[in-house]
Image 1 (cartoon, rainbow, N blue to C red):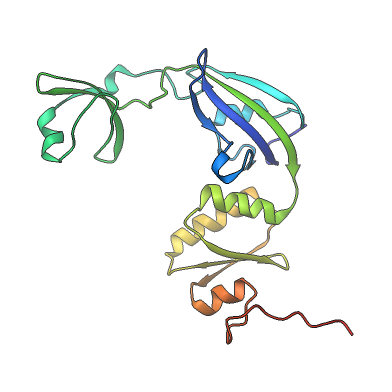
Image 2: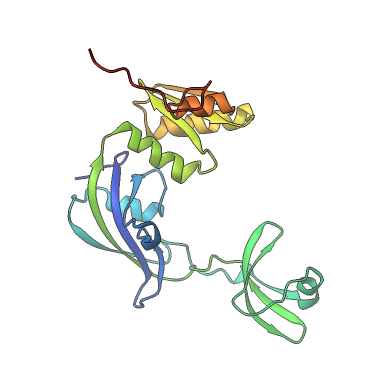
Length: 228
């Protein structure tokens, strides 16, 4: 059985209850991937879904229902606003029903357009919807490198270059604010407590080639000495 803090490889598909409408899935046919690795309880997926996965067994299929309250909450009428159509036109946006817009940093959906006014919904698009997830837990992941790769991909996709060697994680990046470094370091250590050392190095050609195992002078892969 899996428990909170475990890294697990899962296949999942989320649908709106009583419909065939898929809103989330781990299956990416273009990349030939059907699964994803997450840290259970680290909020990579919906918090309520991860809680219901605790205690489940590997290699079994599960159908997990989430009420609207467990998912994205009930629809709040106070978050439905009326905005003059001119506001969008002035910003060169053609307001049509169903269009998602960014208003002062908040994502909203235009529900209707009539008489020079737009009804704009600031609720989450899935608010008020009951959901169902179809989940299969393939395995519990114990390899530290796989855990690091998963955490980087889900939490810090902007970090493109890093290396894990001899128990040390080296992150190559452009100049990074100390606060951001602290956030990254704390998050990684929170979900991978067995990783004790995380170092940051400024992103340079030499460092990147070194991280790929290339000779920094010739820019060619380093030769492995032949055994004698």
